[in-house]
Length: 89
Ligand SMILES: [Zn+2]
Image (cartoon, rainbow, N blue to C red):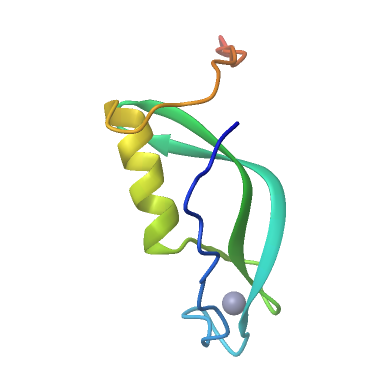
């Protein structure tokens, strides 16, 4: 039983910085974020996606969550293994 205080108050709809597009909110199941402490996966988040070029934008709330989970300030729900490979040659 979790009672998280998620006020899904994301304000998208601003112009894309790459061109003429508009950043629209898009609900996605999961997204992987790269942090200097490692990779973080957030689930059930709303990100901004440009309707012209497809660039992704993340709200400060999301970036704070990534930082907090990566640094251990925010407890995470579970750990998943991420496949790692390197190419030789
Ligand atoms: Zn764009």
